[in-house]
Length: 201
Image 1 (spheres, rainbow, N blue to C red):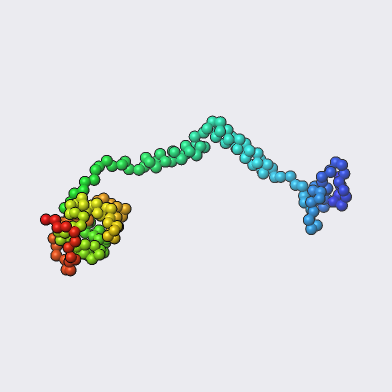
Image 2 (tube, one colour):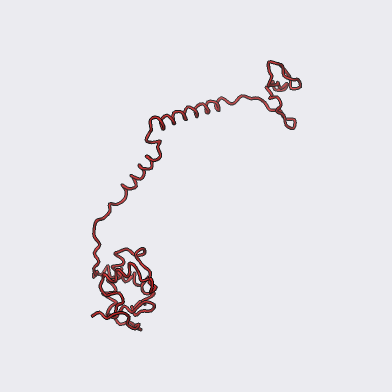
């Protein structure tokens, strides 16, 4: 037994005993007059540490020995993706037919698209501004519904018309083309632009 003021004996080579609390003090652990006690770790901490080791061993055996499915990230990813793919609607095999739509609902939808997008370059009445006059029978890229659909889909970059395949669905493109052919062509604009392209009777 030693005191805080005496050197430790052979039985307590690493410790000194605090005379006030009768607790062990670590030797050579002093800073600014403060001595460090050699307290044991709390029992709950020791058991938590032991349980963590046991859990780690159990986890590694399941993962690397038994190859548990629920612990392998790739299998977990594949399972999640399978669920996502199952929730997707089945792809449609219906072939989209490019033909003029004459029903009132399609023409109304086409007019809405024309007003929001096309009238900026062709004017609301189709007389033409930056873009050509759409009311006459002169066409730069053909007057068939397939020609117009291709033009709207892929654009005419050299003339300043952007492609709309990423902005309008196939149905929306066909609706606005149908509106042009059914309602705009043959109408009388207020200030028509001069004819451009070839005449189609």
